Image 1 (cartoon, rainbow, N blue to C red):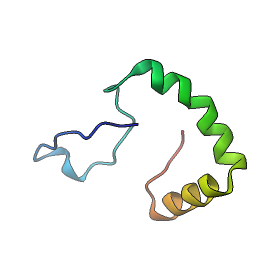
Image 2: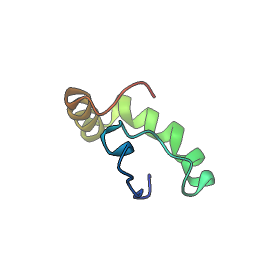
Image 3: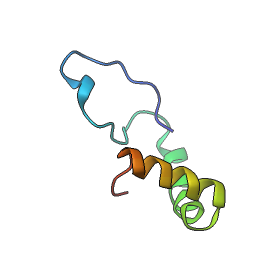
Image 4: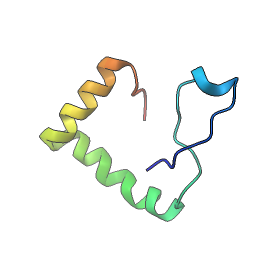
Length: 60
């Protein structure tokens, strides 16, 4: 749920973090369901594993 951000010359090569752009209520409402899905939904578990293998998912 991260709207597309404009990229400047210096920040192009940085890791993308969760931004504060977008609907805060929606972000808050989806946080716990996503954590639950990461543990129990096979499709989401496969996505998480793939992103971790690529080094694109760290921490929360």
